[in-house]
Image (cartoon, rainbow, N blue to C red; front, side, top):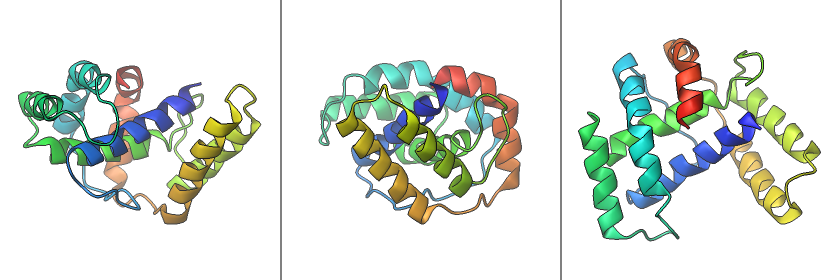
Length: 166
């Protein structure tokens, strides 16, 4: 299911925050995105994904962290923290689009839809489902309306490329 790919992408973005030494924020700090940032994010996904597959646990290998830092700089990001912020914002926005209709919903509405879909999904093992539901319910508590409407239009423009990149 595409909706769960966005959940996984969001979890990966949170993992990147842990890797880069940042504290896990209760809510995504929304930033204004540029077209160039989104294009660079899309271009970086193959290399970032390959490195992320090798990361295990909360305390990553310093070599892998250095590789992530180098890859993000290669694609025009100032540092891993900037990449993290952009990744979190893209994941937030992508999770607000219905994968079938491409219709946008504010975060609280989109999260509630994801929770309802997850509850109805019989293919996910119960322990994993319980953990995912806890994460989504926690996100629901702190979800804020989208602050930069222009970001919604950018994500809509690049939706297909972002969807296939994540």
